[in-house]
Image (tube, rainbow, N blue to C red):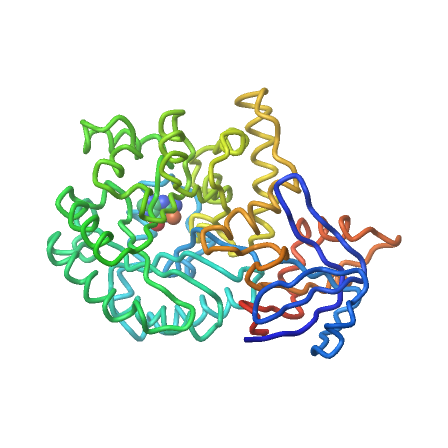
Length: 424
Ligand code: GUN
Ligand code: FE
């Protein structure tokens, strides 16, 4: 349990409209939790170790609610296809390589190292269907000190022979054995149930996964309403369901007791969004991927108006970058295109709103995470934005906006704390 003080220029969200920025202030960590932010350091904390980051930005760690570790190696390649062709011609081809543990170790080491050195402190990660390679990924993620959920992917239909589990039973058995091996093994890495999406999971498999979810009380992550052809396909595969979300719900894998993230939600209807709200499902908004794969623009303003739980996802390698700073800027930009081209009553989302989504919005999936308010888990990233020189003196808020839009996360990270542990 760590207690210390950080001095710097502190930025954090209280809610989506209220972003606090404070020059030369003090952030106190007590027993690995945030104790408070102070303009003058109260005398009771003067004995604590002081990390002096004067003139640097101090922000909460950000949460990536959706990223594919095995796709990291081909990020930024083959970006000229739409989802279903891209899966068949790029993603699945790369994922077959993870039957080789040596390849997995090499590729996942690069992934883990990159995530450690990003602004991300928490992440929900897809692996592949290979349970040994998934365990290798979990070992490496735990070493980073980041707090992560990692999923062995389930897929038993509509995929290439060399990337397809041989039966629903085999997929379920492998999942149980992987959960038993990993559930209590790590300091900060946990299993999450990961049916890839409805097209790649048979009805029999979905039913078995729902049983596993209940037995082991696992959280769940998957994809939802990302692409129009995909949605049509799901309707053919599940003709009795009222929507794609309803198809998950009918199998018992759509929120309620199961803490659940659904990535994309580009074309969620009002009914589907209401079901997400009722069941407490988190939306992982992935603007870069939705653009790269020509999927569309998710109506984030509408989801905020409905008070859905929303966080951001980089969705590497549909998204080409692991940077949540870039994802914040993409979210603001895409909402402007939604407003201009699709619905001029959906106001663009603001920088403040999206900074909230990247920090406290997505952080809620992990508990009291993503803010510096009292009793939040102490995740912080220190950024040296002097790498972005400017001819005038700027406010802390202006510096934060520049750091995000100009990607100061690429070489400006000075320090990083997760749950009170200094990991960089
Ligand atoms: N839907 C099913 N699998 C995937 C994937 O790997 N990436 C994206 N973007 N969508 C998917
Ligand atoms: Fe994805």
